[in-house]
Image (tube, rainbow, N blue to C red; front, side, top):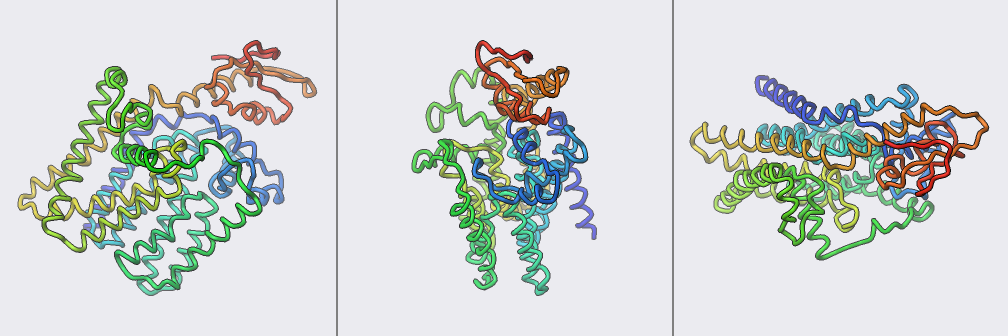
Length: 463
């Protein structure tokens, strides 16, 4: 009971700290894909709502439960108020943090790795964009369903069939929420190989809905082919893995564009953002020394079989979680790590715990643990401060708010031809998602937003 109470306090503290770190996102307005999703999530009747589940040919993703349904419900009740979207994100993130704790505790039976994984997951910088961008809500909701499905499956292994039904249900809902959840069958297969043997007949039902959904999608509703989803292997994959590794250690997303060689940063970038780069490098050094190098060296010397198995399983979880995106070098974002990150943390916390158990002095164990947690919190705070200066999400949210507020102040007749002229800045066009924002706001698909150099629109919008 005392252990559960301590875990509850630690989880609540981690969730509160994550709220404090990412609190500025509460004011992030709708921008970019949000406007498209708001447009396609209007449902006047049951037939229109049912149409949400028909795959679209103009987008590559299929997320009716992750995008259309939440957007439909939230805009129906709250209109164009971003706060309910943001609060929902925080609730889902808190739920994910709790599920990480429950899942890892159930998997390994040890409280320490579960607590530490949940704390580090809660404050991780990989969540940054999702807090600011409503359209990435499925990257919180989808992982929640995947983690829940995995947890229910582990509960089922204790003997109650109802958990198997709940696991399959959560997984199928996850497939309709975010396509990244399709990796769960491979994760379960890896768990069976490395940790605990599972009957293949119990795993087969997890592969079937994936095959059906993929078959229907590509045979009957083929997604568009875009340049950003072109495949890249070898060197491109190595670059992507480098980026995902750094993002896992709370480096900002911008870092992917600041290498002029594989491991060398742009000197100008280093000079201009020296305080931030210093924090990121110092935090990475702390993590590599205390969280990677020393525990792994100790593991190789002592060969704790259980820790080795969990290390390999967590690493496989990380790589399997990245499998859907790792070969798309032009389409890499830190929020793709929200599922893989849990596996990486499982690997590291189990090995770290094994290392601490061989430290005779309690003070050393506490200092090392506090150093790892403090390093993550400090680097996450630095990431948020850095991103507030240059990240595209808060910038485009701000631009979108300014331009749409000015558009709302304009008066025109119901039958009047309306053209809004906007400066031909790419950020303006991205913030408004081309034509979508103003067409949605005024519920008129004939409204034109003109981004030409010499716009002829009657109404002019600018910051």
